[in-house]
Image (cartoon, rainbow, N blue to C red; front, side):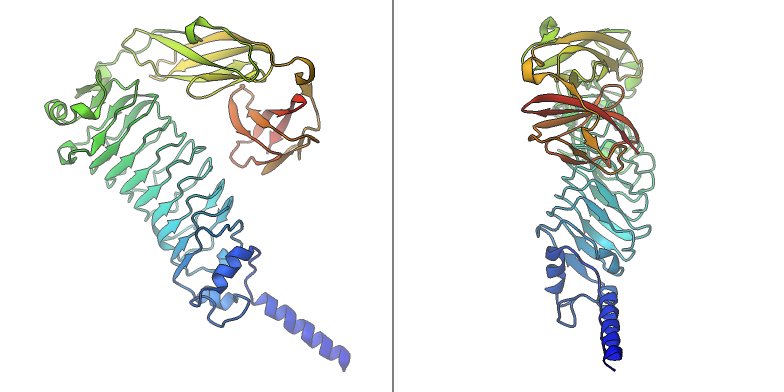
Length: 445
């Protein structure tokens, strides 16, 4: 009798657990329990039935939530606000009832999975270190805010033809195809790495254009048949040092209305392709002709001279060889890592593909305890798929990861790091501690 009673109690306990949503993050769970519209039978658990029945708003912003496990049970929820938390991954693939506004901004997101179908209209992912995001399923989306996603290098909006507002300011996006976005009214691309030509001509409804402070842009095409509809202050492209021409509907109108919207020397034209010559040659050097870095961790600004002088001066920088000795940023700042000779390269961005290289000698980095050590067990797991751990008994001061071409692709401090944004392949890693530099390589798969 006692045995049967115990079995019955255990079965009831298991059944009760199976009926409840598993929510491991205490902050997330407490927020849901405190919502009487969700926790309709006031207790210490959210049942699967309560979650499935809820079709309102979940606002759990600024609560230090690090894990959204359990959100998959809320299949009918319409609005979600997870802004200002500690999230690194978000999987909303089960939340097919989403519509309206989705806030994921101000987190630490490196991965976002959207539902295969939804009716979301406004999406906020601002201020996240995400490297790529698939928004092809968000076909009803009208507003996308991805400002200050500083690792974001590309964005495919070909499926998002209902977009009205697009903000990709302060990202590392190097190019974007806006074909088909005939409903787009507002675009902000300031402080991006878009190089060469930015073509806004397919966007025939534009009334607000912010293309300021784009260091690598040399031509802007806003000839969309709708220039006359842009209100005063609705167009600006100042602070883009390599921009030489803006292609417009009407040159006289542009000169009269937009003369202060561009820097001196930028011209308006009906056809910019005939006003900017292609590059024919290029030379590069360290600023002022300097070809060495001798201070520990020192930097050197690289300079490029493109001919003819009225051709675009915009170039892409990279490391040709010796990436273990120095890294280079997109703006051409070379940073010393270890003693050796690094070959710096540059390529023009106007389509001429003119290249140039120069050698920079790095010294003063590897004396005594600072000598580079090659360590086979510096990184684990190896191969790795999602994250890596640095094996070191000392505090890690800095970590630099390079691709096989020597280009810096990631840098961080500490001993743990997500590598979800890296493409599969072989990488070299340099770790700095108080004992100096250690090097190894690992495989992302």
